[in-house]
Image (cartoon, rainbow, N blue to C red; front, top):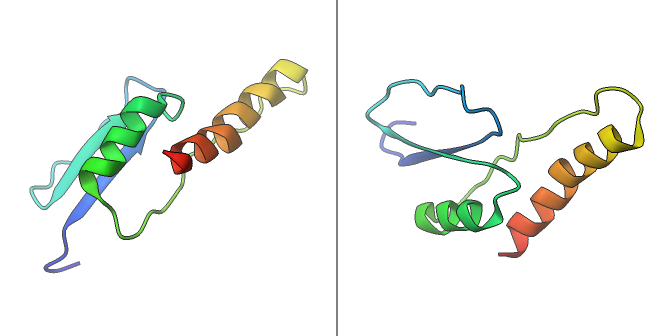
Amino acid sequence: MTGEKVAILAVTRSRGSQTPDNADITYSTADILDYTTLHHEIRRSQPEIVFHLAGVRPRGRSWGAIQQAYQTNLMGTMKGKKR
């Protein structure tokens, strides 16, 4: 990506995540369910292209696990897109 400006928004709920050290890339971190911060970071970076790679899979078959995966994957994406 020579000559390109790259911004990476690491959308994670894990506080232990680390990002590589690279002077040509701007890193930010946000929780996919924190719509205010997510919206702010997207507006700040004004991306031309977005690669959405966030997601969780339900652990177990309980309704709560499935509901959490739905809330994070689908609703997090839709609410982030609307803002």
